[in-house]
Length: 384
Image (cartoon, rainbow, N blue to C red; front, side):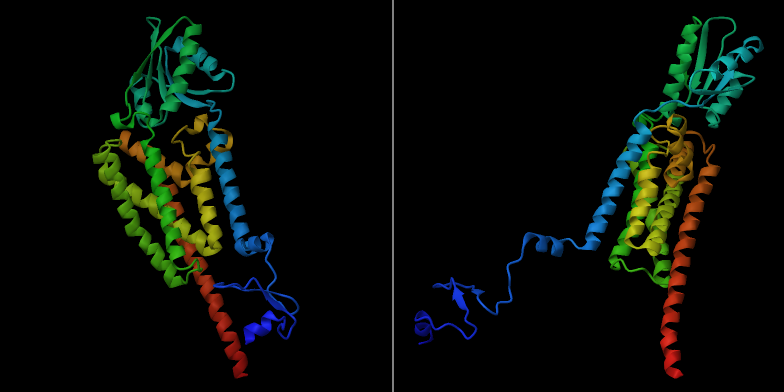
């Protein structure tokens, strides 16, 4: 009967009607006075799907992306040698004139330091005080250039090209002798850089995973201590894994296995501690800051692809002060040069690790103190 009344036009009390209800239909679109479900537009759906917070996060990702492109291409697009350290062994009669001529080359590509003997020049090359040793033969017209390409083939190539051009202008020739080449599995000398790259990224991603597992909440002091403590076994496992890959598996950096394990543990812990600290202070933004420090700024300036003498001034200045640069120097010099010139880089890594721990603990302690103060104030007011 109710259906018959509807068919005769007897609508509902509000004057509305059902449109499109057919046999077997499962939905009704109501029209007329009193309806409260207007059709949603595209812009409304966008506003629901992309909140203000999401838009700000996307903006941050865009800035990191553009920063990545700017930093890497800014550092690598036009490498030019600038004050590449060179040791010169020459007879006293020509030494002063040759030093002046090399130091006066356009653009200051070389920084020349005299040495008394070939043995002294060789020692400087192996202790990483110089990138090449130019030995002049006083009895002939063929000189020798000693290099150690394991320390970075880019600097070796730059020094060789410059000195060969100088020698040709004087109708002399140069024979290049590589006294410390990279391992067979490390033909381009980049394995140290990529190993440290994997360690630094792994460290701050582990810190980020700990943060996300807790719902991105800023941690308490106890939780901060637990996160920092968790980075130690993670760093040790990362060090062992990296040393196995570059040693027994790929033979990129053979030897110095346990030294690499220790270096990897320190690099990963430093990266993770900084990640914990920055995310404790700034939340999700802290992950972006960590990526900025370690990946966007640290990797292109590290000296892994081009040494500081071939980088633009900004990247040359910051490279060895950041963990990727310090870590690359320690790994490379430990594997190929018996640990020479690693003390400063180890102090840099230790300072970043200590700074990360200190900032993380201090931020958590201050935050916990404020929470306790906010709880005691209402209780004191109620007591009064």
